[in-house]
Image (cartoon, rainbow, N blue to C red; front, side):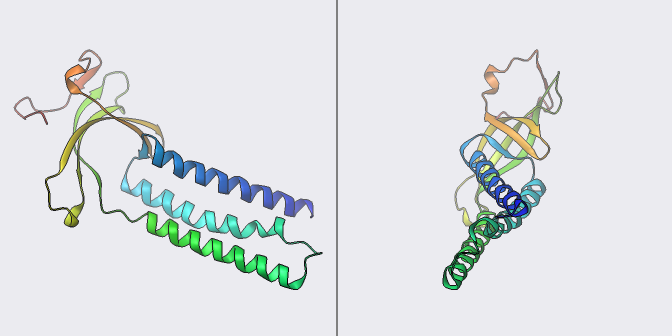
Length: 172
């Protein structure tokens, strides 16, 4: 294996691990996309990059000593995995249910980008029942990514937060 092949192979493995770790963080933690545009951009980017990285792993798995049948098998298997991954990344980006932002209720006095928002959960046209409302603290952690946690506004320290709601509106 040449040094260029080794660099491409190790870089491909690094990208694969990085994307899988990122997707797991989105699924298992309070980390979420800041907007639908951020979601679409990052999902498109990772949806193209992951299958490409899988194909580039061929630089570390194909060897001169491999027979023609072994080489063809490795290429076909790698292309199949890349296509399945591309399909799964496209399908995972389609979602019918989710949280929608209804209103920003509070803003942090020290960090105005940190907010408390009211959200509604629904499944669009598929949903026959009422939407579920909840209050979340939204803290931007990176461009396009927020850390969100459900909060109780009754336990809110009003010294640190500024209300952005009209006093005549009902609390959720």
